[in-house]
Length: 320
Image (tube, rainbow, N blue to C red; front, side, top):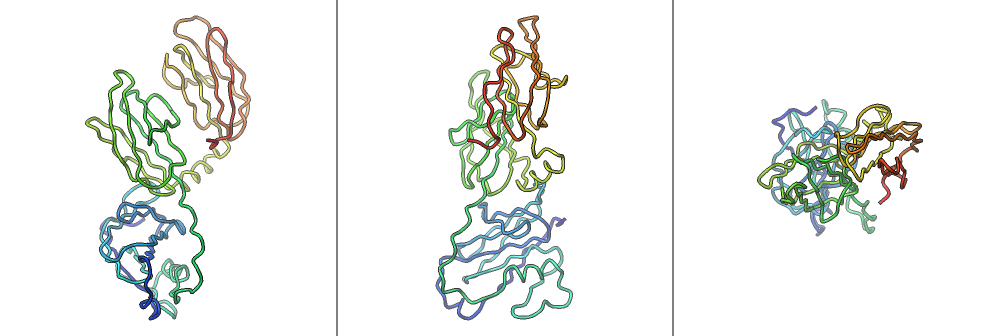
C-alpha cells in the first residue's frame, strides 16, 4: 500500500515526430504501484487496469493529481507539471524517481511494476491512422445517507431507498451532478450540493446540517463486486416490502428495518426459499408468506393486515 507523503514523478517518452505534431491536448497516463483510483483536477479518467489511469486531451501545465486505494483511503495528492507534448507519464512512487527507458531494457533495479508500465505504454511515433473509438466511461453508484428520515434526488431523479435514512443511485454517469435532500418530517431542505462523480466508483456521502454533504467512502466498483463475489452474494436478490399501514417486517425470523415503519428494502437476500412475516401496529393479525426468491432479482411486495403479503412485481437487478 502506498504511504502518505508520496511525490509525483513525471517521465516522458517522446520521439522527434511526436514533438512536431500538433495535437489536441496531452494524453496523460498515471501509474500507481498498487490498485488505485485517480482523478486529475477532480475529473475522472479512463481505467486501463487497476493501477493505470489515462487522461486524454489534457492541457499542458500544472495539474492536481489525487489517488485513493480501493477502500477510498487517500494515497497521494499533489501537482504534476504536464509538458506540451503528445504523451506524458506520471508515476506515483514511494521512494525515488524511476523511469523505464525508451528503446531498451529497464535500468538495473527497476521494479517489476515499472517494467509492466513500459510494456503497457511503449514510446512509439504517432500513428497516421485515425484513433479507435473511445470506450464509454464506466458508470458509478452514489449512496447518500441522512441523519434523519429524508427524501433524496440526484439531478431530480429518485433513487432506490435502502432504508429510512439511505438512498442509492445506480448507473450514474461520470461528471458533475446535483444532489438534493429534504427532511420528511417538516419537508425542510437539508442540503443541495453539486458533486463530481468519477468513473467506475461507488461513492458514499453523509448529509449533515448547514447544507453539507460529506464524502465518507470511495471504492472501485470492481472491488465492491469482488467483495460481493467472495461473500457469495453475486446471485443474491433484493426485496422491497411496502406497508400501507405501519408494520414490522421479519425475514426468516430476523427483524428487518424499524418497528412500525412503512416498509423496508432488504438487501443481499440469497436466492431460494424464505419466510417473510409482517406484524401490524394497529392490528393483532400477523401475516406470513413462504417466498421463493429468484437469483439476481428485485422483488416488490405489499403487506397489509387485510390482504396479507402479496408479490406485486419481479424484475432483474439493474433493470431501469
